[in-house]
Image 1 (cartoon, rainbow, N blue to C red):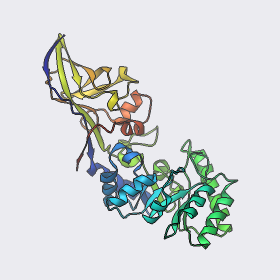
Image 2: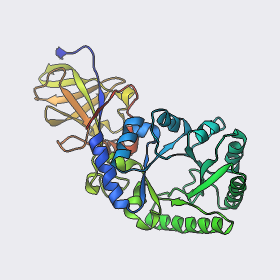
Image 3: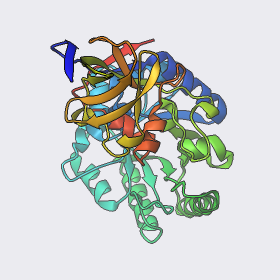
Image 4: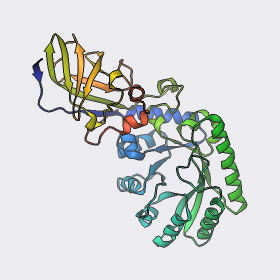
Length: 358
C-alpha cells in the first residue's frame, strides 16, 4: 500500500457550540419552570471547558451552577462568576475556609463535614445544603444519620457558623417506580427535619431525567447535567427527540492517504485522545460526505477505509457531532462502545484543543 499524500502535524479538535448550549439550557428552563435551573459543570463541564460553559449557561437562563468540587468553584470565582455555586464532593483536604469566604455553597452529607466547617474559622457563615441519601448511595446521610446531621447543622446555625439553606438528594433514575419511592422518602426526610426545627429556603432533588419527565420532583430547582449538553438521560429517547442539540463536535484531519485498489486513510486521533477501542467493528467516521468504517484505532491515530472516496491529506474527518449532516453522534458512539454519551464526551482528552463557536 502506497502513501500518496500526507501532512506532518495532526491536530484533532473538539468544537464546542455555545449557541447550542444556550438553546438547550433555555429549552430545559422552559420545561422545568417555575423551578430554576442549576447547570452542572462538573468534570470540566463534561469535558467542554468550565468557564465558557458556565458563562453561556448563565446567559441562557441557568441561575446557579453545580461544580461538584470546591477547587472548581474557586476557579469560577477568580474568573469573576458571581452566580450561586454548589460543591458537594469533599475530602479531608478540602479548603473549607476558602470555600466559605468565596461564597461557594456546600452540600453536606456527614457530621464530620460540619465539624470541619466549624474548625475553619471563616469570617462568615457557610451556606449549606443538607443531603439525605434516598437510595442512590452516592453520598448523603442515611436515614439513620439524618436526624443527627440536621441537629448538628441547626446547632451551628444558632452559633452563626452555618446557614442551612436547602435539603436535597439524588435520584437513582433506575425506574419511575423506584424514583417515586425515593421521592416519598425525600418528603419524609424533609418533614422530619422540619419537625426538628429546620426551615429550608429551597428543596432540590431532580437532575436531567426527573427534570424532564417527573414534574413532582422538580421542587425549587433542577440540576441539569447531561441534557444541557444535548444528550438524553433516557434509554428510550435520543437527545434530538427531546429537542436537544449536542454541543460538541469531535474531528481530526486526515494525516495520510494510502491507495492500493481501495483508499485507506490515517486520521490524527486515537485512544490517547479518548477514542474508545470497544465496538470499533461497528464504528465509522464521516469523511468526504459519507460514513466510512473504522479499521483500527491506535494511541494517536486511527485507520479508516475510505473505499473509492476522493480524499486528501488535511481533509476533516468527523467522529461525532450534532448528527445534522449525517455524522454519528456521541450517543451513537456510546452505543457502539457499550457505554453512555456522558463517558464519550468527558473522555475526550484534555490534550485535544477546545475550539468555541456560537
